Image (cartoon, rainbow over all chains, first blue to last red):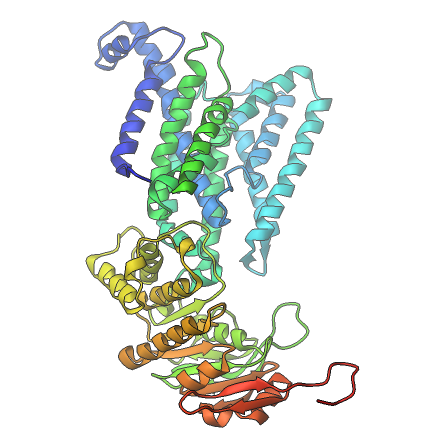
Length: 329
Length: 268
């Protein structure tokens, strides 16, 4: 590690660039000039409409979803004391996907606007509750059991999804498939407000855990000896991480790698202190998803690439480079 | 009771035998007491019960008159530090950060470490002779350095009581001596109350003012090293005939006597 970038300024610049890129990108062909005019209240009505009702809420959603996923990933990695943990590991995503698929197959999703995200949220929360219950023995949460319970629950739910889709109507298969790939299209300001009302307090509560998560990274016994109420901390990390993940999945589907890669990259660049890792992941995750979404819809004309594909295609090589550099240092 | 156990019984969930049976002890304030005994004798169990990390089934462990397990962890961590030789960090941290975790019980959720906190970490590093390694990653330390870093972290907690579980496991004789010497320095200069669990009879006899010898969850002998570390006591505790030697000024050395192998006639 030769150059140490100042974390907050670097990430705010990154975030600003991501927002700007997100606002100027889209099939309508509005350039930076049009956007600037629309932002200052000038320009034509159509530009303003696109900015205010299509790109604006979409960029906002990207920021919220990215921030929530990255904080969730950071929490799970600290809780499971494993840098390979990520928000979807313990079944939140499969639960949400099952809820979404049920809503799609039964036709409820097509009937009412908020039915799909609501079904996904319920599915995700149900999976969280089941895994939590299984891993809790005599008032203690065993994180090894938690991983097994989560992975097994996840596999079971995936099997249910496959079964339903195999027996269900064909067009449901396509809708469900694209849902699982994740998308930020069509998220309204209203939905953004709901997501923010939910994710912002959860993220702030997560930041409060940072000091105890630092202790927990040494193991439960060492953490207790350093003054951490271990069970309470683990419970809080699990619940907050799961809620953040469930919220993002219900509005945007499954967007992989952000929750894994962002906290990890932050750690490589700026160290393992969770008092930095969590807030920095929040900023970096927001920027990464905003960029990824711009890349997903920008250069391909009317076709939109699923954002999960972008985060994986761009995120993974970038991550591998960081990983090589990080271990070499 | 300042630090001790009273009628303490403890059994692990699912285990058939008691790990600790009817232990009543009061540790002397301001001295180093060593707990000795064979594998599975209940030494670490006793230490963890003292630290409030395990809850006794009957009886209890006490710190400053209150049951160890009832202390709020944050309050307890300002009075007592616990050093285990087995813990391993999940993420790479530098020595200074690692030692800085000892300030956790004093920090608010969002407050960064103050100048005073940093000074305390600095003096803990100095006392353990770790200041030159402060910017190293903990994963790159040798076993001896890592153990010193753990003691430094414990000192950053500014405790009155220091509990150590096998503080010199995996250390060579020189480093082992250095750790025990550091502990006696802490007793002399900071008047810490130290309880260490160890397998090294020689170090215990030289550095501890008091030795507790355990076997099968119970105390076999307790007192000054000279009175506890006899061939009779050691033979009973370790279930093996022991010969002791006391070279001038070098404490007690315990040597296991040759015993016939299973199925062989007695001889040699």
